[in-house]
Image (cartoon, rainbow over all chains, first blue to last red; front, side, top):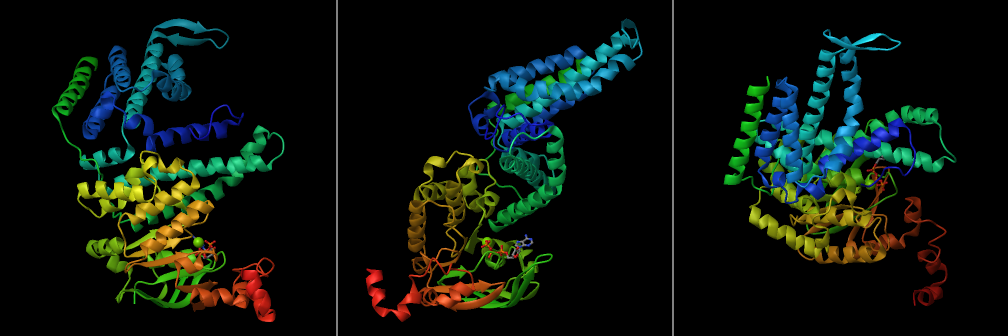
Length: 278
Length: 265
Ligand SMILES: Nc1ncnc2c1ncn2[C@@H]1O[C@H](COP(=O)(O)OP(=O)(O)OP(=O)(O)O)[C@@H](O)[C@H]1O
Ligand SMILES: [Mg+2]
């Protein structure tokens, strides 16, 4: 990682930018894991995109908690077979998404009608069995879906994801926009980070959270302008090198027996879990 | 004529970057574009690469006018992109692939060369630019000088007949700078044309046999490098030299001809 964690104590905005930048950079330049020799890395990107998306679809459709948990177990097994460390998954996915999901899930504990098993002291809010169940389901669902997305991202160079999307008949324009959006967001975050750093190097002493927030707001316009400029230049540079909207890659996608087996297994797991877990 | 510009005007929202510019560049020539910051060099290079089009006036490339409509045609666009390559001033905008290898392979892939040929060609250019060891690195995390080399390699891979360079040596260490100049000198050996925007007067004679000086989007002067370098008044007027630092150059030569030889030796 170019810049990092724990080097300085920044505010919420800076931390969020740092985290987002890290995630984006991983997505665009997943250099370490994407070309490694793990299980997911070896299967055809089309199978991978199709397979993992069908598992995500299954997670969205099924309602039984044990079935969702089963898919999470499959995802964890896939991660292990693909040499993606569980520590990294925990640090990058499970913990960071937890608070966001909890914000949505926790009210469900109190608001879902049903059998009251406990009452929150002082506030006297009823906690229902159904409420706990649905909150758990929501959290599990989100964590599982995000894990599956990250598996794809960590095991596939992003140009392959783009090309695979083209094969699924996603229109050229959409793929280009997606590609550009990724670059754009990365540039935006990069610029934001640089702006913070240069501000900090010019400021003597610590800034309060309020000061930081004020800087962030004041710079938002500059930031967008500069990023827009840069990403426009990136687009020109792509055109200059012959880019006309279609994605061409050096690697040919080729279905081997291995890939067909993987395709069947993905489809099998997805269908089975939808059938049993609805 | 390779490029012919007639009365070309180009403005950004508020800023006029090129102002009724007239110039012609001959086939096979090596040209330097000189000018202070903001004089319009980068804008001119982008226009020569057909990334922007004149708002007034016209640009001709080998006799054909370059217009937006022409570029709607794939065949024309590919033929042009195959022949003309631009290395951007800021390498960050030019590097957008996951690895250096992919970066260099990008252009030939877009132009749909056979894949075996692409691999061979990319390997060759990586060796020639001495960036073989960076092959699997992420371009966006390289050092500034490494980025510049990769950006250059990603354009040279097509072996373009016309090479447009926007400050290629800026930010390189002296050794890489002279390596790059050597490479460009070799490169331009054939029928190739090289058009370089630069602030660096020291290497001027090596990279160009003709100079154009831009000043606020207009052509201020043109001539061979020796002549331009001798015209001290012109260089000062167009902010290319700092009067104080260049005291020893031609200024003194006229008043003290004897000093000339002693200083040169
Ligand atoms: N994207 C843009 N939007 C608005 N104005 C621009 C843009 N790009 C350049 N300009 C303006 O156009 C003028 C010419 O800019 P250009 O980049 O061509 O100069 P340059 O000769 O390359 O300068 P430098 O030596 O600093 O690279 C400048 O006044 C600049 O401010
Ligand atoms: Mg410039």
